[in-house]
Image 1 (cartoon, rainbow, N blue to C red):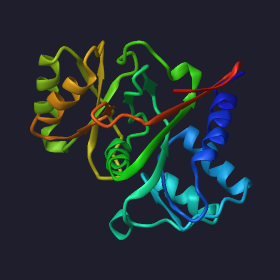
Image 2 (image 1 turned 90 degrees about the vertical axis):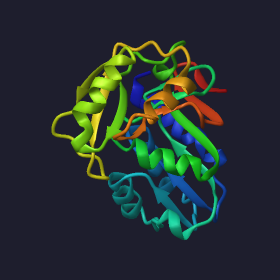
Image 3 (image 1 turned 135 degrees about the vertical axis):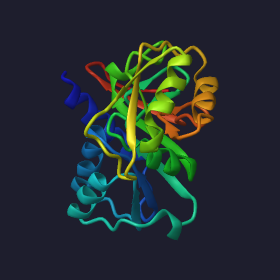
Image 4 (image 1 turned 45 degrees about the vertical axis):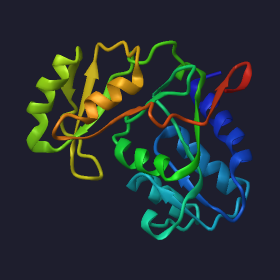
Length: 217
């Protein structure tokens, strides 16, 4: 089973968490693209969707779904998104698609956060995937120096602007033994918008697709 097949299987399994007629939080990335396709293929009726990126908004609208501003809705019942890594505690690294800040906002505004991914995203210790940090452009080198003091090697994702108009630094060489502590430390650096560690607010459910079927934890 290739990764795309695993992603599609996880996306299809997540439909059980989608209640017809609700406002659904929708993340960003290749696995979420499968989710949007599955919603449309199964004719799932939604009151609307809150999207974490321009790319997901376009795909949702093309599938016939109304995209709403988070400020215009109450608490979201369920938010579904992918991940670049997940550990056994459902703590995540996200932000490979540079939408981490909007993803974190929607996750915080949702009653339930469902993470969907292929089996290869599960790890014992987070950090093999470079940890994304969204930063204000003028603070990029200042933040880089501070991140080096935390033991990582930050690399500017040159040529990439987030939907918020900011830069991304990817931190290489980390083994994240205490994700909540590192999330807090990075968020305290002046110039950081947010970090792609979802540990203070981890996923409530992780669904992984693999050759052996679906795994939930």
